[in-house]
Structure formats: C-alpha cells, structure tokens
Image (tube, rainbow, N blue to C red; front, side, top):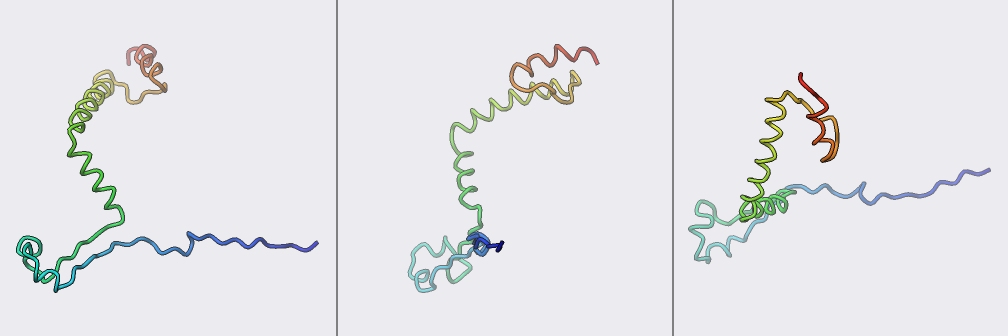
Length: 113
C-alpha cells in the first residue's frame, strides 16, 4: 500500500511578527506647520512610536477616564474588603467551595481554627 502525504500549509507559520513601528512626518510638512513649536520643538520632524498593543492601551486609558470607572472601583473595593476580612481576621486562607452558594456556606463549615 502506498503512503500518500497530505500537503499542509500553515499561513501563520511564515507570517512576519508584528514589531514596533515608527511613523515619521516629512520635514517639509513640519517646517510649514504653525504648531511645530508645540508638537516637536527639538526635532526637525515629528515621529510617532506605535507598539503592538497600543490600541489596547488607548482603550484602557478611555475606560479609566470614564465616569463609570469610579463607580466600578468602589464596588470592587467593597468586595475586596470582605475577602480581606475573611482571609486575615477569620483565617480562611482559601475558599474551597465554588459558586455563590458554596462561598456563602464555607464559613459555616470551617468552624474555629
């Protein structure tokens, strides 16, 4: 019996890795611009450095600048303080039961330590 091989090509194998990019403006564009003194006072032309995850960073900056962020932080702080109390004062190093009902029942099952 003759063995036949399936030809397989993975397009992601030879794809170039996304590296940091540096975008540069032309010197002629920057010399005529009225905002050059504010934009790039020490260089002849403007250069912008963009990393791979710059889009994600911009989204995170928008989220932290929103009004909802303060409300969400306050909610998280309340929950984190409850868990800190359970761990530090009551001595529960880890919760062994999963889900909201399990976490609710955990302190009743553990008893004094």
